[in-house]
Length: 118
Image (cartoon, rainbow, N blue to C red; front, side, top):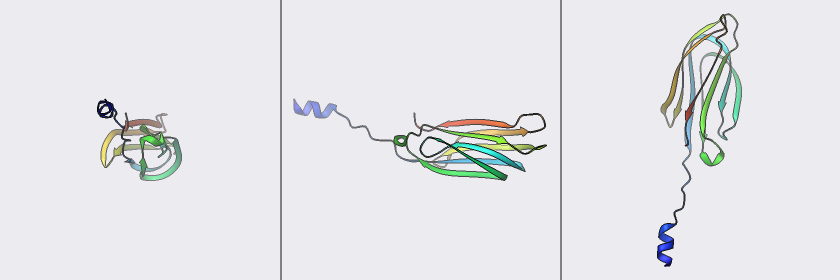
């Protein structure tokens, strides 16, 4: 009977750590407000001025991380930026979107995500 009970009990193995990389590639130098999911699953906010931006973090499910979220807000006045943004999980692009931000017509923000742990 003991053998039967031990055969049925399974220990759940925690999900391994993953490397998340957020990328923004724009066509024009501009200023941005950027928000992304940090290693602990909580939002991190920063600012950036330039053409290309990236941030790499290590996250794990036990630490509260589920989805990688990237928010981009164009803060430069009279600026049009085209390009792309992506979120990579373990060096493989998991989510990618085109960027078209234009502060002249009010289209200044974009948010997207990639499911990491289900």
